Image 1 (cartoon, rainbow, N blue to C red):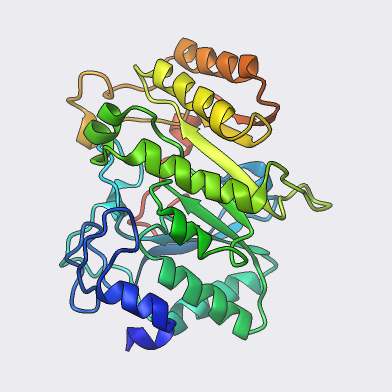
Image 2 (cartoon, helix red, strand yellow; image 1 turned 90 degrees about the vertical axis):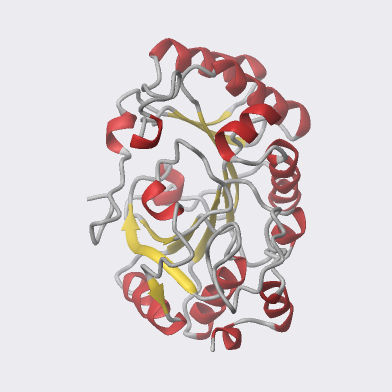
Length: 313
């Protein structure tokens, strides 16, 4: 029974799911009929060592990433569409908690020191169960919450003390783009509240160990979309005004058009260099002093294939 893996509060949430901002209210023990199309089990597309995150996240040895299936957003350009767009009948990657822990501990036993939870907004009880299960087995890895940012503030609050590093996206500040591109008009306000809670827990500092790997903190990601550099500048302006110019920013140029947007009038191309450089310039002029930028060739490098045992090889 999946319910045995969760505490009473999380069981009640999954019985009438209000976990994410969608608040579908479905009983996830019965089916995966909610917006995320994910039931109360452990639906995972891949557990692998990933070296493609920011240098302070991956480190030299890489991070053990757990890629969950399903999502509480419908981004039309999603780079991980192979696993995010699952149907209620899709049982690919169905695992037990015991099998998840077996795979993760096998990787940690090889010297990997951190575990990343990728697209976890709709599976927070599962994230908690995995962390607690690892701790019970004597493993205390550094934990990374790698999220699209569409999280409820109280859900993030419930993770205090369990998550070492928050790695949220902040995609848009415009309701129209949020609705059109991701199916969530309230994304700007919701994501900002969630990131503010992360900032409340972690602050601006991102302390590093002797190997240059982050030990604790907050790192905000933003993917610059082709045709919309002004939106990216507004995102940075909002972070500067509402949070801090001291936070760490990862400004990404890795966008590439998937088959879902080949006919889109704007998103059907990669990013122009001048678009990206104008956003970098805005970041610098706003006074952000911590973070990372990407090479323009990154759109070729970061293309996962989840039909493979290791999607990034």
